[in-house]
Image (cartoon, rainbow, N blue to C red; front, top):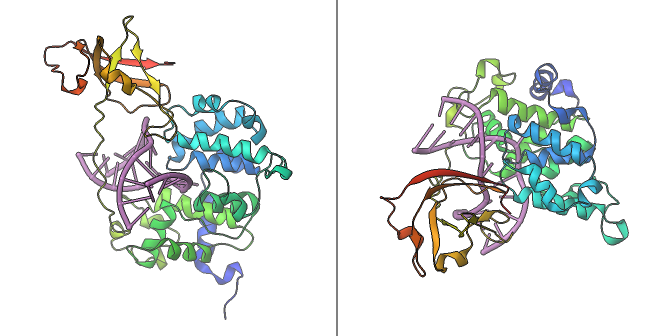
Amino acid sequence: MKSSKTNDHPLRKSLIDWYDAEKRDLPWRRTKDPWLILLSEVILQQTQVSRGVEYWEKISDRFPNPRALAKVDQEELLTLWQGAGYYARARRLHALAVQVSKPAIEGGFDGTIPGSIEQLLELPGIGAYTAAAVGSIAFDLHIGVVDGNVRRVASRQTGNSNPTHDLVSIWANSMLIPGRPGDSNQAMMDLGAVICKPKTPKCELCPISDSCEGKENPLAYPAATKRKKSIENLDAAVLLDPSGRPRLSRRDSSERFGGMWGPPMSDIATDSLTLVGEVVHHLTHRELRVKVWSGQCSKGTDPSTVPISNLDRKILKIAGVM
DNA sequence: AAAGCGGGGTC
DNA sequence: GACCCAGCTTT
């Protein structure tokens, strides 16, 4: 006879007990404020918790509610976002703040975060994972999250080396403790991050190893995905103006590396500028590292074809370039 | 379904 | 050097 009572579901009971005893002490777990929780989830999109903490601390401090962010220029958030990567997240977060800060009559939410999955999914930068995370953690909605951790745990637990998103979602829902959906989801993610790790799982410490179909060979689950392309080789040239200042322009948000600084395409065909090198570091919001060579680039020449063997090389770090 | 976005950790 | 990270958006 099925029952939703916690004690009748040993697996999820074991997990939540482990969580209550071993959960990580994270700053956003001390609030129930939907905005602060949403902020944490956006920051943690493809960003490890250990690195996300410092960004959450300073951004939540500066923008304690959506209206505080909505009333400033997007640039101010981008500055705080420097170094975090995936800068489109910051632009979308600002757009989200602007949107929810509108009056309800104009389609906004009067400066609050809406509490239904459907409404959350309408917001910029909020997809299936983040909507479920905010919905369950801030609003106690009974919905399981599917992230990289949950997918891996589900794959190993069920012995399915390549589970579909829907299958993982159903499994995650079955693991929710009635009345504690947010804790249940965070328990599963903690388990994936701390115990059921990709390369070095600690099965001997896992609270649900008894039911795990993959514990004999955990690294086989989930199956390896297609090999990612190797490191991108950015060979864009950077040119100096006559004063020695790098000529950089900001890319439109719709372009590749949108919103970031790089060499203006027009410079490629500009006469009599100094070729200073190639970009060797990813372009960040307003910081650029380049290998620098001194040399001449004449009009119409592709800078990447200019010989550099005899040129003087050094590394420049350019910060705050406007 | 696949590509693009990123900097840093880990093995 | 390859893989991974509390994913989302666009094509």
